[in-house]
Length: 259
Image 1: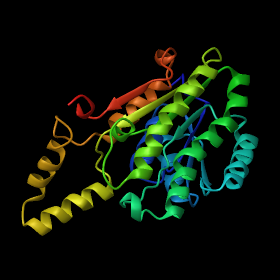
Image 2: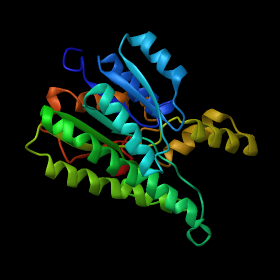
Image 3: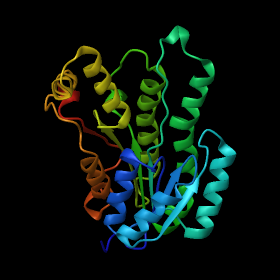
């Protein structure tokens, strides 16, 4: 709590799901939170403030637009002085074979999944360097190191985020700033749960059986990755105990990456 108190953490794409879980984890550790989404998540910000007693700012910006990112960051730096912790979580994806992939969806994925983290990093770094402290955490994926059909935008951008992480880590190695990537496996997101429910409904099988089979094809543990577990890893990486961890790609995937 003491190590995080007074620090500001910006989590993108944080209204619900993994983004919200990571924001909750950081708030629980005492950090003030900037809760970002496409539209400012005011209700979620109120809930976070009431639950943890920290300062919370709701910020809305279209991360596909550089001007929107710059406007948001100018306002946040004016209000907070610095963003001490940046969690690049926001992501979009489109499911399609390569030859049918809409070019505009490709450009949008590059903008949100790759260019936005670059712009946010370049904008938070000056104040981090001035304070001699910073934590940058990029969300990768099991697909940062593996491929899957019909998701060329996701596989490409999640692979490239590893390059951003390494480059930032090298440039900030002596500044008190660290930059790492967390690579989760299958999380119990609404999209995944709906997909499993659809398979179960179409096959007439119990959801539990389909879930076990779905996960068994991926994660040797046959369990979903806990969002709280990912949040705990984020909190650890922001702690003094992780001062020497930088440039790393850290799997939390139930053994998928080594299977």
